[in-house]
Image (tube, rainbow, N blue to C red; front, side):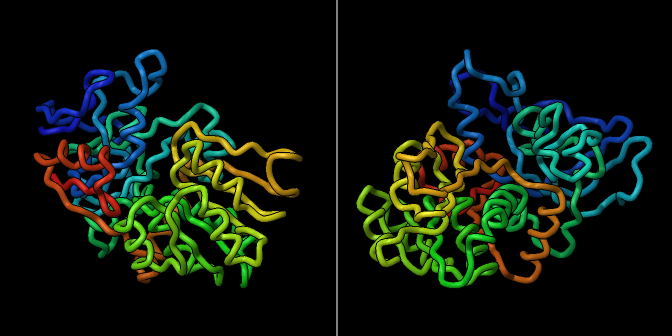
Length: 341
């Protein structure tokens, strides 16, 4: 079968032919119907050989996956051949305290996420380790819904974690209106009565942020802090969501957060907000978001079924997958790039 793999540290992904897998006991074989390309994949491929801690190469990419159940291993129940499903990505041990709550991304033994710590779904077929990691897709289109598993789930957890700060009349800032950020804007409009401000680098991205519901948009540059304070009587943003995670955006978040505000860092990069008595306003809290729970993915799917959120996708064939990653690397993707085998 065809698969898009990261094969050499420091190189770009390659489309190769590998053997079609066979499900062992408790496993499920999916015929992949869609797989999302994520900036996390770019992060993996940008890590040096000395710092690389993911599945040893070759690694089949793709942690956002939708598929149809093709075959099941011994002992698998409650899964039907031909069923359309989404794959919950943060695979944990299933037995520790966090996994018992459905928070498998915080598993005490560490995640085995496909496309990161095990082979993923940027291929024609994929093995899923356990039926609990499948969420029925129902009548939703797998191509437009596959990224609910990360681009929907992660911002949902981020927004949900800050709902107590997002009372009517408050202001929320989304830094980065890309694959995750454009969903966060929609979630903020669906779940709160806050004013939503989006920051990004170019006119195209800011127009996109307005299209999906942002009330105000500004360029993501130091002067944006003054613009946000101008909207808020000089007080600043009640919650700042950083979907980029580099130091300039972290500094921007610190510069615009209000007293007793909240900063949520989602972007996978090395930026950090220093929270201390002299670095940010008093009573500011911070959080780094790690994906989301199985229960939250089910909630996200329900929001999509109700039309509350919609992920903008650019569709590519598996033969075009390397092109999709090149465009993702260059910042040319509007929303999410989805590969369809």
